Structure formats: structure tokens, C-alpha cells
Image 1 (cartoon, rainbow, N blue to C red):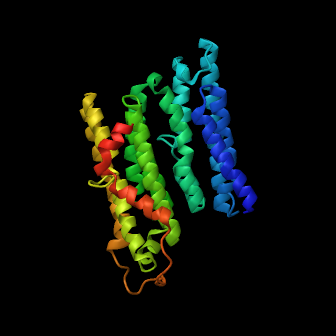
Image 2: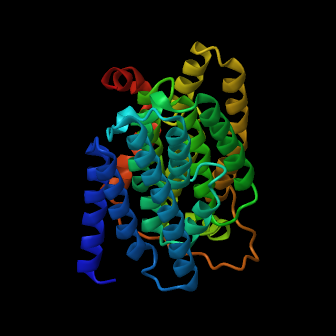
Image 3: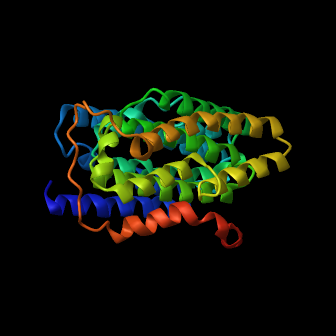
Length: 346
């Protein structure tokens, strides 16, 4: 891909995200989302592989439909209330349409079908952007309109996302698909708490993004795309694989790692809101996710492939691991003791 084209795409992504997260007017938020969609399309399709082209078309169609629904929702609301302010979404039909549009943008159940396929067809760095940065603008809109949305609908979608993200990830062998279902499951945790404590949703998103970026960069360094190649990648970078195991367990939400913090706080907040049954259900559903994270951790570090393996052992790489992966891994693993300070800043 031409470096200039790549630079323009990345700058457009930054511009679109900045416009959406800083706007109060529906038209500006919609414009930012459209810029984002158009900027990511060349990055998904840059390999010109049939799977990449298919992923691009799926992504474009879903995002265009979601943007249309969002525009229709805001126009209907402006028609009935005379307000174009994002925080003044009060019309019931508009609230329902917006929830649908944002669920499509994020990949929440039941609008999740496109997300694993698009991630599987994208290069590793583009998949990283799709799983983290591209979710920030829709979550910001959800954050700004959370006080007017239907709690029962959001809770149902959140529990369904946590359940389906866990179930569907169990039998996957492609790592990008596993991380896509992991993302759907985490979105369920974010959505369930957004009405009761929106700041906690943002904190969960930041920590999820941190751990996901670390995982993707590590996998990109070791050139790992499937579970079978993950079994032999330990010979290439043993130390990096060991830290990858800890990052995956952090994504699963095991104490005393960073990923335990948002789950702990969400369950605590749900219990305060007298939603003990909901908290119990979503905590039990996270065990499904724990299973496939343990499977990934087991394949990356704990198990050795059998001797008559079809994959050749890879040469040990002596180049030092990049500083950014080292810093991100440390943050992905060690932030739990700093939770009082993190809570004070949010």
C-alpha cells in the first residue's frame, strides 16, 4: 500500500474519531462516523485477497445501514422536539432506532454477524483498529444518550452479547475470530452498566482497549494467526509468549491482573442497583470466555506440540521486543493495585 495513502487513511481515522467524540450536534457526529467508515475501507481491502474484499463489502454495507438509521433517528427526534443536541434525544422511536444503529456499529447481539467475518478478513493491524479505535465513537454517542435509552432493551442485548461471545468463541481455531467474539463479550459488560454508571463503561472500554492492543501487537510480532501456529511460536520469542499468556488471562478477568478491575466494579455497581440476578448471570457467562482464553494461554505457553507436527519449529529471534509492547504488557497485567488512583481520576 502506498505510504501516502496509508498516512491519509490514518489521519482521516483520527479526524473522524475526533469530530464524533467532540460534537454535540447530530449532523457533526454522523459526519465523523462517515469519515471513519470511508477511511478504514482501504486499510481492510489493502491485501486484495478475496476474503479481504468480502470483508470490506460486508463492513461497508453494515456501517452504511447503521449510519442511515442513526441519521433517521436524529431527524425524527429533531422533527418532534426541535432539538439537534445529542443529549436531548427524548422521542421513544428515535431512542429505539439509535439503540439499533449503535448496536450495529459496535457489533452487539443480535447485530454481531458481520464483526467476526470482517476481523478474519482484515490484516492484523487493521483488525486491531476495528476492535478498539473504531468502537470509540459509537460508545461515546451511547455514553451521551444513555440517560434516555431503554434499560430493559440494553440489559437484554448485553446479556445476549456476553452469552453469545462466550459460546461462539469456544470452537474457533482462527485467533482473529476468537478475539472478535471476545470483543462482543466485553461489549456486553460495557452495555449492561452504561445506564447506571456511564463513566464505568468508559473505564471498561479503556482497559479492554489496552489489553486488546497488547494482544494484537504481540500476535503480530510472532506472526500468529491460528491456534496451530501459536503452538510453535514459543520457540521464536519465549518471553513474549509468556507475557502473552498473562495478558490473555487479564482479558479473561482473573485477579490479580488488570482485567479483573472492570468486572469487579461492574458486578459491585449492579449489586448496588439491586440487580443481583443480572450480576450473577453475567458473571457466570464470563466463565465461557475464561475457557477460550485459557485455551489460548495453554496453546501459547503451557503445551508443547507433539513431535510429528506438521509445522516446522521456528528459529529463535534475538531482536529485542519493542518498547511499546513491553509498556502495554506491563499495564495490561499490573494495574489492579493502582485501582484506587484510577477510580479517583475517573
